[in-house]
Image (cartoon, rainbow, N blue to C red; front, side):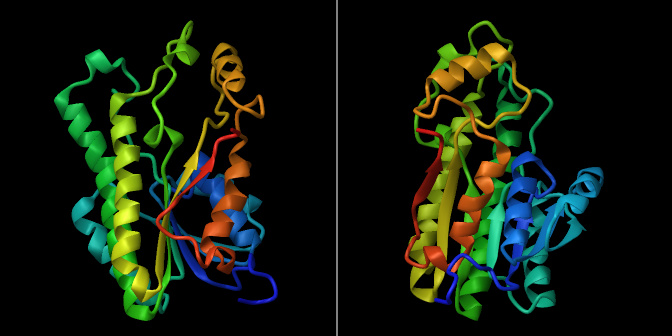
Length: 254
């Protein structure tokens, strides 16, 4: 471990969904800590908005993370072109147009497609990234999950709004957390650490009524800013977390 265990020192780090709200916060933090970040996303306009705000090195590669058949080739190509990857973050959030509808109106087809796009893509990317890292002596895989993969939602916070949380979201995030533990056990002896980063509610222009109700449920009395998820991500990528694997790092304001 170097003098600064939080310094990333030019390590190659991939972030799927890196042009999104949480992904961009994670990209900025990783680049500022010295990481050489590769953003995988299909949102070129989002990347164009993000790029000027990055202090450090980051590049963009267009990628549709929902193309499950392409995932092995994507990981293999990135590993080969970069002479290995130090860390891999799954942070993409693809979803169907019906996402967010009341659970009783959710269709089997919508459920299946969202599980494929969200949970299955995370699990496949994580597994192939861990395998590549194991072959090169180690690395860190981080899946951005959610507290809703750990605890049940309090539906009272949605009262008086047109918001809810889909049942599939809890199943997906819970599955991502469980698979992270599985990979941590499978590849730990080969130097690969796998963890889940679990944010609580993040401000995203929600109705004031929801923000107030949610804030009352937290010990800090507020929702998170997206940038507050970046530093914990740096911790999980850096040597500072060298003895941390198979865990869920909860960032939820209590």
